[in-house]
View (cartoon, rainbow, N blue to C red):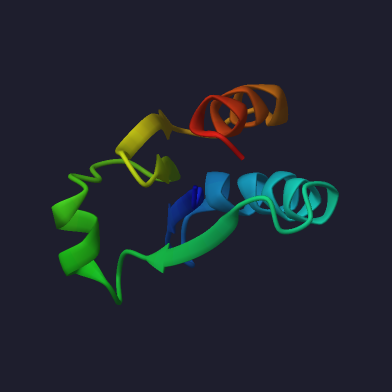
Length: 89
């Protein structure tokens, strides 16, 4: 089972900068149990539109079956971990 966390962000987005260290920490602690895909909405609008991203930051957690969880706004580590576990990471 592949678990992916898509991080929709923009360079000008203040809350995105708050979210970054939380994700980096998770990535280090969960070593290889999930993949992080950073999606810059200014450069990759097609992907942002496909996922109907309207606010930043938006996190989308997916597995082979599709989207498991979606978070809008700065999301706490515990919530992300719960969703990753639900997704099978």
